[in-house]
Length: 266
Image 1 (cartoon, rainbow, N blue to C red):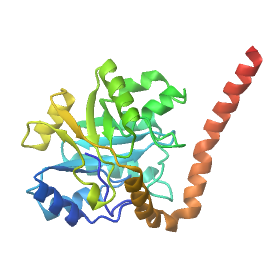
Image 2 (cartoon, rainbow, N blue to C red; image 1 turned 135 degrees about the vertical axis):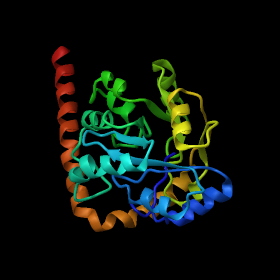
Image 3 (tube, one colour; image 1 turned 120 degrees about the horizontal axis):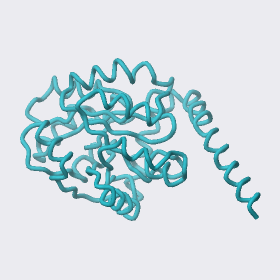
């Protein structure tokens, strides 16, 4: 439910991902960063693999948001109308859309809105729960989401368990995915439901009639994946640095404001 291809920041070809999914007897959600061409290619290539049309949209204020559509037509329309015009010069990084704006866009389509890696990643605020916990976003933002990714292959077990706890307390639905970029990753985390079509599957997820199984990547696997992703970003080094700089200025200001308030209360 969270897999990237060479249509964004992964070296994995769509045809290879489809072939392995078919061999393993599993479905696949292609969720490229701010892109839908991988989904379109998958649909042209092999209709025998259950495909969930998806995209991972990077919000300007931090969170990465997984949108799963009931139809690829809606996915493409949403992308072309709302997301493509807001992409940065580093296409896999943050769009100029905020979390609230992405949620508002999603309300116009039949889709499932899930927060990817809710407490990730590292020093970056790329998770919804992390942004709310650090007070960059209001807790009310949870109400704009259907669910959380409670097993993300790129996260640690404690952070995944923490995300699962939030989903349980708030009655949110849940998914699991590898956040895979290498073909090797595919199938290590699965979202399971009794369903034969995309619609049946997403309805099962929405109504919490699913389970999530899998494991997190170890340190070596994470290092190999990062090394494989790096060449995809090198052509965009300068715009990528610019995005990170502009994106982190409000967070630095927020941190300094909090420190000033703390010092003022002493």
